[in-house]
Image (cartoon, rainbow, N blue to C red; front, top):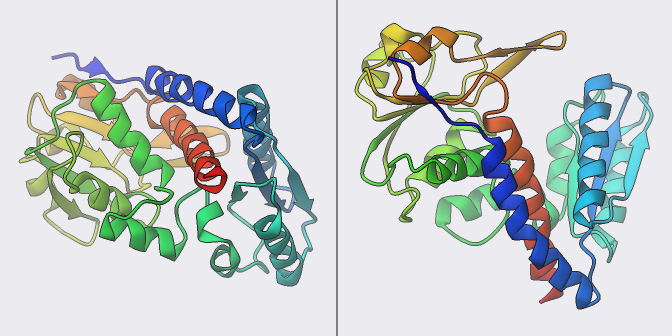
Amino acid sequence: MTARLLPGGPVADAVLADLAPRIEALVAAGHRPGLGTILVGDDSASAGYIRMKMEKATALGLTSPHVHLPQDATQADLLAVVREFNAAGDVDAVLIQHPTPPQIDFDAALLELDPDKDVDGLHPVNMGRLALGMPGPVPCTPAGIEALLAHHEIPVSGRHVVILGRGTTLGRPLALLLSQKRPSANAAVTVVHTGVPDWPEYTRRADVVIAAVGVPGILRPEHLTPGVTVVGGGVRYEGKRLLPDVDESCAEVAGAITPRVGGVGPTTIAMLFRNAVEAAERRAA
């Protein structure tokens, strides 16, 4: 069996196409959306991510104010910038780039951020909103995975979805998202992790398996039932080389699978901009 590929590019294009008229409407009403970004330190990969997001923001018609703090910046320096963006009328959403230098407490900075401007959807208030089904920014990668499955018409409602991984940025919020009562969700969700010795017993019973551990090659063909849908959400980097959780040989067993490159990544970026535009719409209203 050769699995059907589930690329993220077309999903991202559809999300961004939906945002275009909404951005135009905001601008016409005198409110141009703004995505503020904060980078602390000199990590080249992080600088590249920020540059790409700023370029995309400009292309979409958003403003993109940016503050780059030096490698030796203090916690007080970062909190001062966060407070400035919280108060800025022309900034609707804020991204604090992670990772930060060791002297910086990222979680404390996130707590200082206005939850309504939290473009990543990871503030404790927003995680609580997600758990309660209340409106607010949704974590980008989980939202992108839901959109990807819906776009490619993978049945989720009423099906058994197994998430391998319980991290706060992916596995945990994704379980909350996919169990909500919505046509593109409404699943029976099981969360397993490396602390569960017999986790393959769960993945072999799944209709959809989502790998979200950050352990390269952890999911292999023997952990799957033929025809299952496989989504690779977790990755690790070795230099610039991307090492996904899903071994490439899983494509020989799966019925549908995300590609090694260009799967969940593009949808994550698209959802970040969706959060930014929705934040602008809420503030404009």
